Length: 261
Image (cartoon, rainbow, N blue to C red; front, side, top):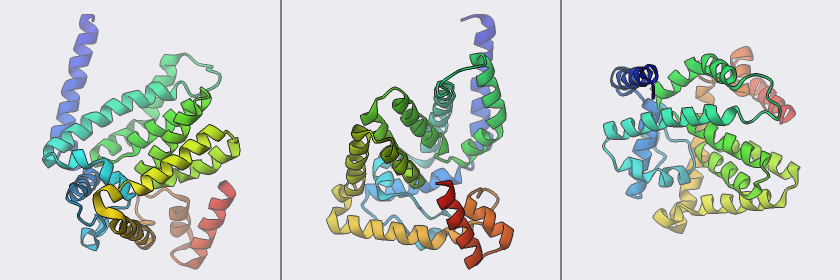
């Protein structure tokens, strides 16, 4: 490694340490939700609690079970692992994303530079909040690359893993079906069944059913109040802010969603 690269690496490491100590570490409110529910899953405690207020857990029960190891760490240590893990995933995401185009028309370095510059603000926001969007993007991109490489079983499995990380990745399932590749469809179906059954290993069969009922109730009852916040850039949020809350904005959102799908 040349002196220039060594100096640049040292600068980036120092910058990341400063960012964690003074920016991300004291915050990361979204990650605290994952850490708290992972801790609850380790003790087979209820995951969905109204007392959590705005920061109520909204992901599938399998997410909490799979992230149990992170909940065993002290909060600050867990934040450190999550922060630097997210940075590593960010590097992986950029490296994977440039492989997506069927035909590359620009030099690789320019694709990387433009991607990083265009999304830098959002990457930084993601790290400060401690969200799972980078992890989700890496998994989803991995699924797309698997499809491109005709690795159908892996593609179906990665789509299921993306659903665990962000439930709205279920929108990829109709795409898998439309592609009519039996291995990816079978892999996705088997994976979804496993995801739904996994919490039973910790909570038992009745507890697993109760958890999924609580998840559905939480998602359906707590989504509407969040449609007007700045970070909500969904179609539903757009119509909510455009025409106001009520049945009309809901119908417009559902209609637009069906058309887009």
